[in-house]
Length: 400
Image (cartoon, rainbow, N blue to C red; front, top):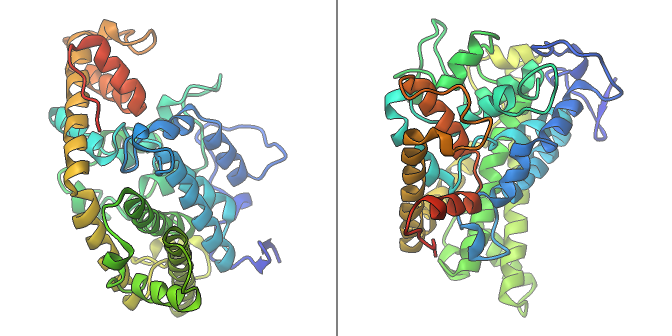
């Protein structure tokens, strides 16, 4: 029996040697296919750019706040831990965690809102779909194909990051009821990612690991920024319990170490809850393959009801006390203006984009031009976006 990190691989894990393959056939090498996916993502240009993309705080606001890259690495660490404990494929879970934010534009969700508004006449902009576009079209490192030519399982997990996108008849559901994102429709014409089903178990692990990582590290960053105090979060379920334990065991511990110890305990309990709950769900559903996980009609990976309630309380607290904080809101409004300015400028002046981006474009081909501009702007780092804005406009905000 195969072994995954000391625990026997469960029957419902994805098997790298039974992959549905790649869109473009390639010879095998010494790595298993999912490890190869992971390595390709790490070596991609889009992955490196995450270093200078906002998580909550713009890059120059402090050296110790999370960036989109450090967030991604923390998601990968959580995903590996959960996959290992459940006996799932760690390489696939890690690959999906590393890829989940490749399509994020500069300045976090504010940047996404700005580009979505700019692209409203052309199908909008969605960072999850843009991640798929990055790994299937925009990365250009290989001679034989555009993108990274990842396995079907990796692409499926990226596309269905938050669950099914369509009903069985192919009609968009939920946030996509008005239509599927452009990148998803383009790729679906070449490869069926079974958008009506849930993603495989490792993709579900990566998705919940994203929630766990940003819940905990945003609490940590919010404490560091002074948006709230240890006393403010003591009333939160799970967090308050951990804080009480730390204070009882280490009554003389300095405050910054108290915060770190609290966050360590919170993330451990979130992971342990997911492992227990997911193992119980899989046993109850009696799933015996990753295909059965996809066809089940509900997630196998998840929090217990009690932990789901506690985690929702953390999210609500962060939304009101951090994401909607006056300082964050002001900076993000200015950042949205930067991206709107850049989009409008390059739409009117495509020749100002670098060679390779401005080739074969004509103002009369509005959809293609707008998509090319959106791809270019979305790929920018925070710093590059500000530099480009200063190049074409007289006044560029400092974003502080």
